Image 1 (cartoon, rainbow, N blue to C red):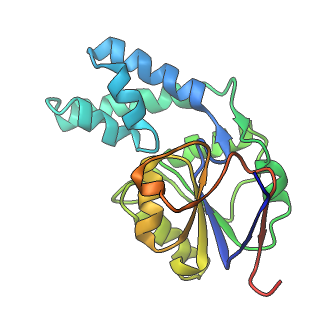
Image 2 (cartoon, rainbow, N blue to C red; image 1 turned 30 degrees about the horizontal axis):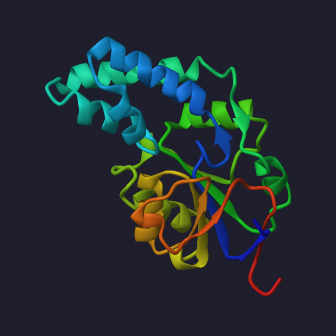
Length: 210
């Protein structure tokens, strides 16, 4: 695939699957969850990609009380925070972030503490702006996270480029009004016509008129 040269006022990145490869860890924890709670992992694992943990728990265990779901979510997030083995950067992520000439943010479905730990574990710099799942009312696929990131960076969403790898995140980015680049092999109706790259190698980001 040819290199991708992008001009934008700011860059907004999803984290898991876009900057950080945490797939093995995340899927292991969700498969354990499925065995513990009698949920079909073939259904849950794909659905969970790009979504907040409490949203996934609520979707698959609707019979639980809020207190039970909160306790279960806290346990799952604690397991994730304690499992950093195998967390690595998506190819090209470190080089891209090290050479950025424009403001950037991370908008993730992970809570803040987990996001920071994963970025550090992958050897990546922390962003100027981090919008984690536990600091917004609505998670992906709602556009709230990307709208907030653009606002915090002082730019219009339409002047931003978003890099995403999962269906909820792609929809979130589209609805924010940003330009969207798909990272990886996600192929759904929402990705039709969007730019795409296999990873972040060969991606160049520059401010307008640079």
